[in-house]
Every structure is written in structure tokens, then in C-alpha cells.
Length: 201
Image 1 (cartoon, rainbow, N blue to C red):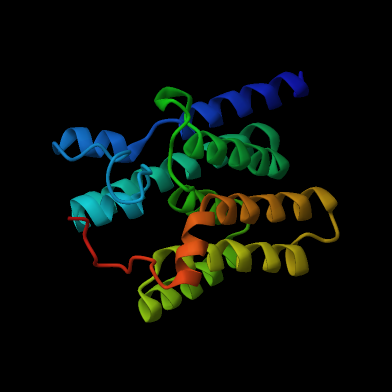
Image 2 (image 1 turned 135 degrees about the vertical axis):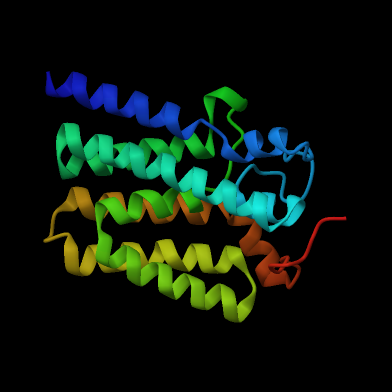
């Protein structure tokens, strides 16, 4: 029965993640095709850059809430490991959504939702650091990668208790974020990364 529950949580979380808030917001407000403008992904950063602050915030909140809810479902049905399990699959769904040809966002807003459910204190610390980095550098991508990396470090060092499942989970979640930002890393190194506030022509 537990195996079936894990399968059920994985499927539900993945499908929840596959709901693209960005595409729904773009359709609702007659916005552009997000896959053809800006970074060509459907996450909150691209919506912010192409549609403005209101649409960007709505996308961020929607993506954050779907991940938070998925993690809570996993926690409710399977305990703490269930929250980690659901978090992994909701991020997979967001990044590679089955409803939208497996072309999604980069998982940052969604990660914010699951982080607070799985390990609240590291999450709060990581949020503050990410906001400080974004405010000082104007690079959302840099702040995002630093947020997930710091979160993984804090969880592994102080909250895993040596549990290899938790350690592996934290590393994978940070790795997914960095992988999805690989083109941003190249642009950061080349000095061509867009800063917050810059809009697509």
C-alpha cells in the first residue's frame, strides 16, 4: 500500500507541477507566447521581463503555491520523506510539463514553495540571502542559484542528521536549478545576462 501511495503522490505532484502558471497568465492577459520571447521559458522571471511586475508576481505566487501544496500532500500522506518525494516530482513537472510539450520554467518559484514545507529555517535563510543578492546585483538567475545552493548546504550540514536520502535530495534539487540555469551561467560569465527591470523589446 505504501508503494502505491508513493506512486500516487509522484503522479499527483508531477501533474500539479505541469500546470504552467506563466502560460495561463499570458493567455489571461493576452500576453506574448512565452516560448518565443525573452528566455523562452514559462517561469516567473520571463513573465516579469516580458509582461511586467503584476503578471510576474502572479506567476511567482501560482508556481510557489502549487509546489507548496504538492509538498503538503506528500507530508500528509507519507510524512517527511513524502514531502521530499512530492517536491522532487512537482519540480520535474514544472520544468518539463506533460501538458505543454515538456517545455516549462526553471523551477525557482516552485522551489520556494516546497522549501518552506521541507526545511523551514534553511528556507527562510536562503530566501533572505537570495533577495539580498538579487537586490545588489539585479541578476535574478544568480540569486536563484545561490538560494538553492545555500539551501542544500544548510540542509546537508545541519538538518540531514547524516541521512543520505535527505542529503541526496538536497543536492539533486540544487542541481536541477543550476542545470536549468546553465545558459544563464554562460551569459553571467560573458557579461550578457539581463538584469531585473530590463524588458524584452
